[in-house]
Amino acid sequence: MINLLSIWQFLLVFEIVLFSSYTLIMYMSSKKKEELPDIDNLPTVTLIIPMYNEEKVIKEKIENTAQLDYPHEKLQVVLLDDYSTDKSEKVSLDTIGQTSLNATVVKNEGGKGKARGLNWIFSSINSGITVISDADALLKEDSLLEITKNYVDPEIGGVTGKIIILSDKTRMSKSHEDSYRFYFDIWRQGESNIDSVSVCNGPLMSFRTSILKKIKIDPNAYADDSDMLFKIIGLGYRVIYEQKAIVYERVPLSFKGRTIQKMKRINGLRKVYLNNYRLIGKGGFGKVIYPYALLTHIISPIAVLGLVFLYPAVVFSEPLYGFFLLFFILPKLGGILVSFMVTQFIMNFSFLVPTSGSWEAVEDARYSLDSNDNV
Image (cartoon, rainbow, N blue to C red; front, side, top):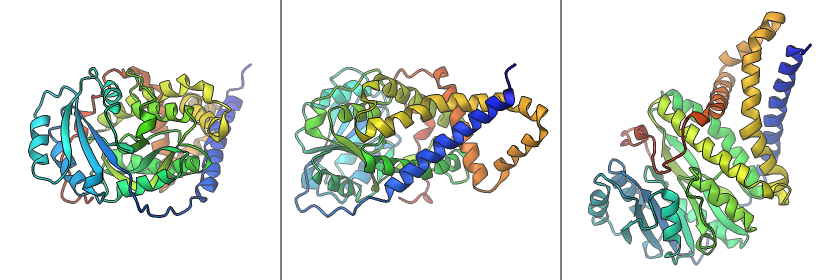
C-alpha cells in the first residue's frame, strides 16, 4: 500500500532542498561581483524599441529615452513598428520631433511577429552594442552606461538589466512580484558570477551586435529574449545580469492580466529550456545553472501540485500537519509562500494559454503612470 504521508514528506523535502540549496549557492556566488571601471571610449549603441499598437505608452517611452545619460551622438534609436493598427507611428514621429534623439520609425519587413522583425533588422545594425527595450518599460538615466561597462570583457556576449515594478503599491500583483524579485536578483547575480543567467529580462537586454548577426530567433518562441540568451551561450559567450542597469516595468492592473502574462512567459521559457538540452554538462552553466533551471521550472511545479492535492489526506490521517497552514499567515514569510504557491500553480496550468502571437501584450499593462510613481 502506498504511504501518502511518505510521498508528501518526500515532495516537501524535495522543494525545500531544491530552492534553499540553489538560493544558498547563488547567494554565496553573488558576493563575488567586482566594481567595474568607467569606460573612456563608449561603444556605439542601437536601441531597438519593438512597437505594436503602443499609442498609450510610446510617447512616454520616447521622452524617457531622450533623458538617458548616454551621449546622443553614439546612440541610434529604432522604433520597430510591426504592422500597428493604431496611432503608434504618428505619436512616435510627433514625439521624436520634439527631442534631440537620433531616432527613426522603421516598418518591419521581415514578416509579422516580434522575432521575425528582430531577425530582419539585426542585419542592418552597425553599432557595437544592440539594446532591446519594451515600449511599456522605462529606463533609468544611467542604465545604458551601466550596461556597456560590462563589454570590456570579451567573453561577455550579452547583458540584461534589473527590473523594478511600477504599479499601485496596494495591488496584490505588485506585492507578489516584489517578493519574487527579491530572490530573482540573488539568483541572477549568482548565475552571472558563475557563468551566465538562465533567464533574460526582456524589458532591458543588450548584446554584441556582431553576435546577433550569427543567430536567428525562433519565430514561434514567445520567450524571444531567452531564446537569444541560449543561442548566444551556445556560441561560447556569457550573458550576465547588471543590477545597476535598472528598468521600470508596468505590472498588469488585474490579477487575470498578470496571470496570463506569466503563463505565456513560462510556456515560452520551458520551450527554450527543453530545446537546448545539448548544453547540459558544458561549463558552469551546463553543470549547475541549467540543471537547476530545468528542476525549478518543470519538475518543481508538479511536486507542488502533488503537495497541495495530497495535503487534505495527510491532515486527515495526521492532524498535527494542519499547523503547516500557520506559516501562510506569518508576516513576510506568508507573503513569500503565497507568491511561491501562486507562481507554481500558474506554471502547472500555463498550457491553457496559447503562446501564439508574441507581440500581444496584456492590454491592462498599457497605462500612463500616476504622478506618485516616480522614475
